[in-house]
View: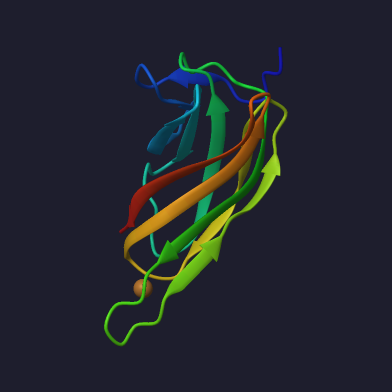
Length: 130
Ligand SMILES: [Cu+2]
């Protein structure tokens, strides 16, 4: 049992490490990608983030997370923006933690690329930085 961080079932589909709240979840081909942190939201600036890949019941799933990137399209005079999390694997299958710098408040498109026994996948979802 790799019990560095105990998992708690937050909802039927969303497991986050204990003490953390879910920011976003996305189901992809039998896997569930869960993004969480203490606040349960992203803010403009530096964010600590946890990315967990689980099965449909919230149990850790063996997976390699390759990238977690965010993108905001150009709007008016504002150029497009992007960001990339710096993640490290934790001592539990499919669990990563690190930091994500978010350049500004507002809606972002997020993409988490990961690989599991079924092959490579991309989980895409919308997230709002406060
Ligand atoms: Cu922007």
